[in-house]
Structure formats: structure tokens, C-alpha cells
Length: 239
Image 1 (cartoon, rainbow, N blue to C red):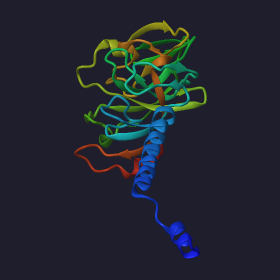
Image 2: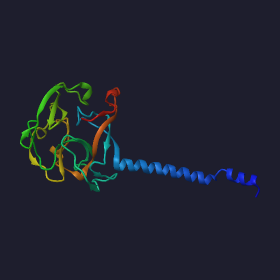
Image 3: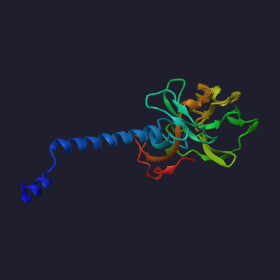
Image 4: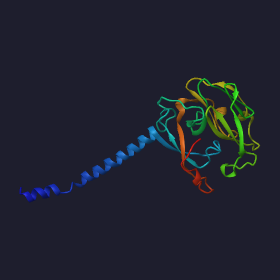
């Protein structure tokens, strides 16, 4: 073979089959990486309904960190392994033991705590959780506008968050009063920030840690159908 023939051989493009195989490997690798990140590290979650008003609104989209608590595989009811527990005040995504739906709630009690509610006031370990009136609820922050709705601030330790209370005429007494319950190991108590419109531990019971899917971090998109886009909520951390 002459030197010119050798150079032509070196410059010859690779067979199309090799290029196709390389592209397939790249695509498969990218999909596998995306799935790994979604399963182990982060996942997007859509807020549907008023149960977390005013902290999270109907139409908010949030980023959820999955790695702090365990490994929760897609389409599973419980984590296959757990290694962490949320703190009081954390907003978490849990798999509801009532209907197997993903719901977003705030942690109010952890193992060893005794939690109760009397006339809408939360009690933790025998003491009322400090609660301060902030302001009337903003109409744009309510899925169902109620002029009687009020925003309150609750404080536990060095953490605080906003809740809302409203009376739409159909609020049942089991949401306003809840007998004391001591949280056993491996469980948490969760409540919605909109205390009058939330299906939470007052009705579905204590939540096993194996059903905690992740910790909600921040809002990356907010668009309530039928209303204007909420640009000011984008990339807002969850209090």
C-alpha cells in the first residue's frame, strides 16, 4: 500500500452503523442519567388545590429533593429504604395511606411529640404553638375566594411559616379539634397550611417515614389556570 493509500484509509469516515450506535448510546445514557436524577435526587411536583395556601398555591410547580429521606422508586407505595427524617416545619411530599395519591403537607410533629388541636389552635407537647394574626388572605392567593379568610404566622423554635383559616360554611368539626396523639418512632404528623381545607393527619392518620417521598425546596413555575402567570413566585424558596 502506498503512502497516499494509507492516508486515504485513515481519513475514511467511520461506517454509518458505528455512528448510529454511538448516537444511540448517547441518547440511552442521557435518558438513564435523567431517570437516575429523578429517582434519587430531584423531582418536579405540581400543586393541585388549596390545601397549602398561602405557602403554596394551586398551579405552583415545585422542585422536590428526594435524597434526604430515602430511596423511593417510581410507582411504588413506600420507599425501599429510608435513612432520614424531616424536621418540624418542613414541607414534604408524601404518599397518602388513604388513597395512594401524592400530597404535599407541612410536618407538625415527629417521633416523641404529642400533637393536638383545639378550636383550630395547634398544641405541641402540651403547649400552644405561637400563632400571630398577619393579615386578611389575598384574593389572588385563594383558589376559592373567601372574604373571611385570614393569614396567621406559626412559630416553632427558630422556624416560622404562614397558615390560613377560613369559614366557608361546610368546615367539619373534626378539622378544628383533634385529640392528643403521641407520635411513635418512624412516623410524622402532617397538616396543610390551609387548616380548613386540607386532607391531612387529622383524617388520614400518622404518616410512616417510608411514605415520605421528598422535601419541597422552591417554586420554579406558577400558573393558575384561568388567571395570569405569577412571575413573582418563580424560584421562590418554600418557607
